[in-house]
Image (cartoon, rainbow, N blue to C red; front, side):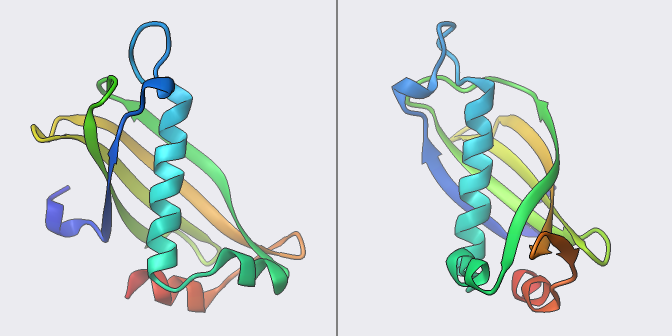
Length: 134
């Protein structure tokens, strides 16, 4: 994707404790990076998880596909970029990529699919979809 195609990006730096014995970021840690970027994006768009929960609505991940391309190591700086799209009436897809800074080496590509549950049942939430796409 071209940088202008993204809806959001967030900068990070690898912390020592996120690395495994091989000296690279543990594969599960990347899930935290991706989630944090999605949450910050949604907060920036005015979506409040606590308020939604009080209404009985919860945004949840139902599917995740990840292609690991290259490893990050301690103190690496990187950026998580994302684009969101409506996949169906009920599902949102977040297309996320991680790039090392400053060389822009592609580290990871992911597709994360989420839905909104209202009292445990999937529902369409047009106001959330509109907020994320604006």
